Image (cartoon, rainbow, N blue to C red):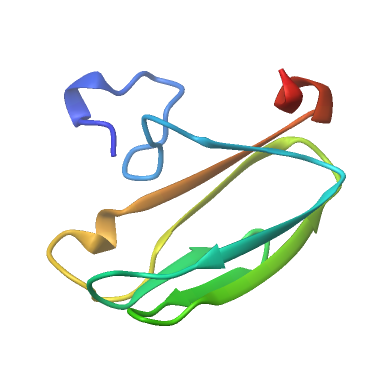
Length: 100
């Protein structure tokens, strides 16, 4: 999470991150999710994705987005101190930009 003193006017407070996850649009995306410590819940409501990461288990989800943009989510479980502030940002870019 970006500290408050480093946020620009165009950033979203408590939702933006230092490193966004770039993914190509017009592609089927498959996530394999696991955890090593506690249960996490990887949630991005605007895509309709919510999947739990459980210790010792491998879960999967897949989705398809057909246009570029940014999608915000966060961990939605009470899995530890300040985990309610653990944001997730997916940035959908063109397949050509993704390959570069």
